[in-house]
Image 1: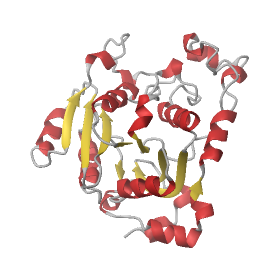
Image 2 (image 1 turned 90 degrees about the vertical axis):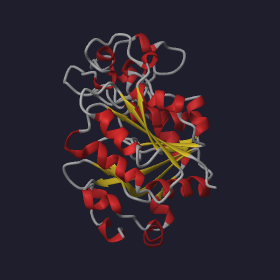
Image 3 (image 1 turned 120 degrees about the vertical axis):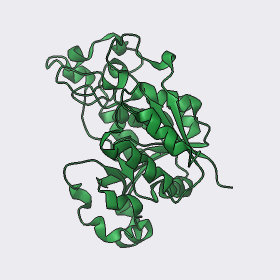
Image 4 (image 1 turned 180 degrees about the horizontal axis):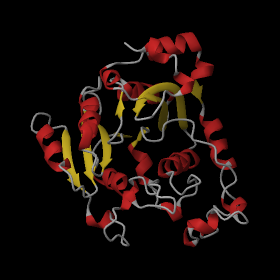
Length: 296
């Protein structure tokens, strides 16, 4: 029997417009079947629980979990941790606590992430699993294309992409990603300096920014659909805003920080230019605008 893979889906009030249901259906329709689909609810006030439990009745792989109190932000009042707003009203915490709780309860040999308002192509998890085995990777990242409902039932022909584009075009190797992590890491963001006690707004202040942000390159892959071995979560967790070494300019970037942290810790992260994730974006990913021809 193939190994169990845990899918962690953090959510907060995403049951509207069928978003969460679509995300869950895209997991149900995965070609890789031995999944546990963990919905970690950060205290939604909509019908999230009812929706998830109704789907559990027909598919016991789906399980509802309310975020455990010890994983909640101690400073929370009426604001949920993964919806904490920054000074420009951006979501700065990106579900970090819900994902960490998912790590704790996950039983899979492998773990992957899925956002509650997005979806995946039907062979996303199978393709990532096969890539991880083939390249003996610790973590695998892939790319994204725009979410449309009709795409959620489709697969992408990864073999054809490799054949036509060539491995040198598709594969981003660990040494490239590790070097990227290091060159984007600020001088004071190493272990010897207690940067977590420095408020984010001070880190981003123009006169001090260079000490905390050496570069702002994007992680070379979709950090909301990472696939990795269970051993990763024994050393690396998602971090709250002021603890992040690789946040984005507005304080968000929990996924970017996690992905670069894994790359630096294990030095065995691989990324592939294969658009397997479906992101709820306003336009197509320009890098993969002509990849519709690979869908089947």
